[in-house]
Image (cartoon, rainbow, N blue to C red; front, side, top):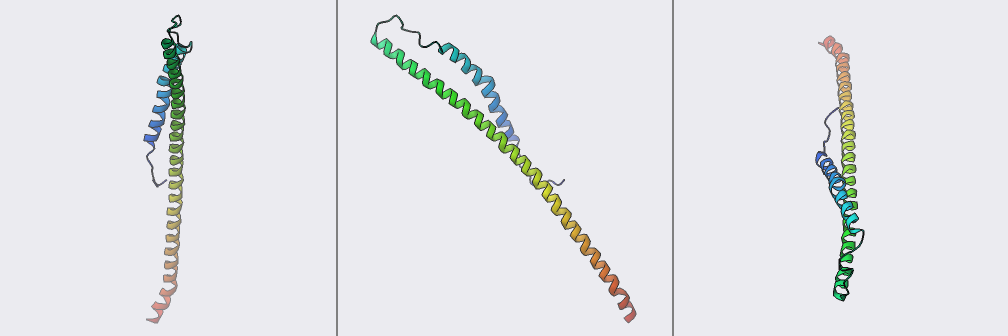
Length: 136
């Protein structure tokens, strides 16, 4: 098979693998640990009657909730991006294979046409050669 057009997809595949690994081996476990720790709610200031402490506690709880949602969305987006990169790489690789096959077909068709033209030229020369030799 000819080389055709070759798109280097190694970078896309490496990116996809790295993002998937980082998400599943680093972010996911770290997030799970934090979620367990923070899942019991905000524990400080429980016995404090101060309104300022309770307000701070509410702001902290809202921050934890927003941070949790951000991490979840980040991990979901990272997985989508990694999957998309892997799909693009696979599609480009398949396109390269089809391109190479098509190039081979075209090369074969051109070679067959050249052989046929050569055979016709030789046949034509053979038909005209005896008449030319007799006329001389």
